[in-house]
Image 1 (cartoon, rainbow, N blue to C red):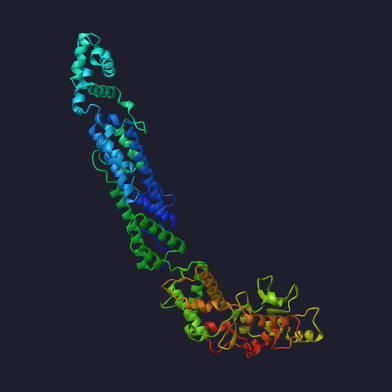
Image 2 (cartoon, rainbow, N blue to C red; image 1 turned 60 degrees about the vertical axis):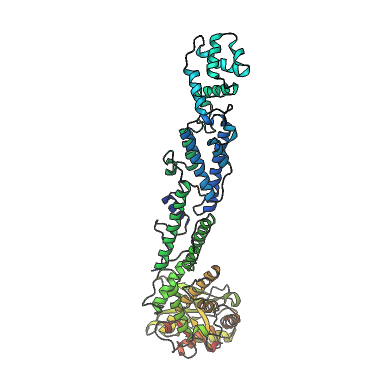
Length: 571
C-alpha cells in the first residue's frame, strides 16, 4: 500500500523534524546552528563567518603579543597554528577562506618581522642569560637591583649604570657579554615575561597560546562537540570530519528516497519542495548530490487535497466493482495509478465510449437550479425518524411535491407522491395538482426519488439526458472535487497517473443546459399548469410510474441501474 514516506530516522521525509533528526544523528547540529534544519547554505555561511571571526581574533591576539612569541613554548605555538589552519580549512572547504589565517601563522611561526628579537641573537642565548639574571648570585648586587640596573644600562650605558661601583659593573658586563644594549633589552624583556606571563593574554583572558587559550578557541568554534577534543599537537582535520558528516547526511537522504521509490511511497508537495531545497543547499556548499533532486520528483506524485474525498471515492469504486488494474482497489486515500485506473474504468463504462477519444460535451448540473428557479428541496422528518424529500417554491413553507410512504386503504405499504397547491395557483393548476396528489408509485421509483438529494446530478451522454443519484452521483461529485484539488496543485498527477480522466471529469460542469432544465422545472412546479409529463411533479412522477419517460436505463445493469434515470424527453 502506498504510504507517505518515512525515513530511517522515524520522521516523515521532508518535514522539518526530519532534517533536525538526521543533522543531530550525524553530528552536524552539535557543531553548526541551522535556523531551520534544511537551510544548510546559510547555516554553513554563518558557521564559517564565526570561524573567520575567531581566526581574526587569534591574529589580533598574537599581533599584540608578537614580541614575546619567541619566548612561548614551541609546542603551544604549533598547536595554535594547527587550530588556525584547521579552522581555515573548514572555511576554504566552503569557499570562505580567512586572510587573517596566514598573518596569524606568520607571527606564530616567528617568520614575521615583528617577532624578531631586537638584538638578533639566538633565543637560547637570551634565555640562558635571563636565567643568570634571575638565578645568578653576584656579590654586592641584590636581587631587587638586577632588573633596575639592566633598565639603567639600556637607557644610558653599562658604565653610567654602575656609577663607579665595581661589583655592579662586573654584574652588568657579565650579562652584556659585549653584545650591546639591544642584547640587554632582549634579556630584560625575557626576564619580565618570565616574572609575569599572565600579563600577555588574548581576548579570551587566557595566556597567549597556552593550552587553556587553545582549548578555549576550540570550545568557541565547536562548542562541546567531540571535534574540539582532538589530540593535542596533531593536525586538525576539522574539514575532513565535517565533510564526512555531511556525506552521511546526504547518504541518509538518498537511502530514504531510494527506499520510497522501491516501495512506491510518496512525498507531499510541501515536503518534496523542502527536500529539493535542502539538496540544492547542500550542493551550493560544494557537496555532491547528483541526481537526487530528480529522484524526489519521482516521489512527488501524490495529488494532495482532501484525502477523505479520495478514500470515499475508492470505497465507491470498490462497491461499484471498478478496481483498476488490480483485483481490488486499496482504500488508502491516495489518488495514485490504481485509483486513477479504476475511475477511468467507471467513466468508460458509464459513457459506453472510450473516454480517451470522446469529442462530445458531458455536462452535469444541479437539476433544481435553486438560484435560478426558486425551487428548493427540503425534508420532512417524522416522529419515528422517517425522512421524506419535498420540493418547495421560494420562501413558501408548503411543499408542492413531497415523497411519502405510509399505509393507505388496503395497502399496508403505500409509496406515493403528495402534490400541493399554493394560493397563487389557478383553477386549472389546482385541478391538475389534485390528479397527482396521493398518486402511488413503485418501490423502485420511490427509492430513486428518495436518493434525489444534494448529490443528484443531470448529465448528458451520447444524446441521452440522465438523472443520476446515490453512489453514482456521489462518485462523480468526488471526482469533480478531486479535479478541483488538482487544479490547485497545477493539475499534477506525476508519471504514475493519467490526466485525461481529469479533463473528462472537469467538463462535467454547469452550462446553458443547466439553465434550460432549471427554468423548465421551476416554471412547471411553481407557476405552470402542471400539465403532466412536462412538469417536475407530473413528469418525474408519471415517468417513473409508467416507466416510459423516466425509466431505468436498460443498458445499465447491476448497481448502476439503480441510480441512473433517463429524463431525455423532458428536454
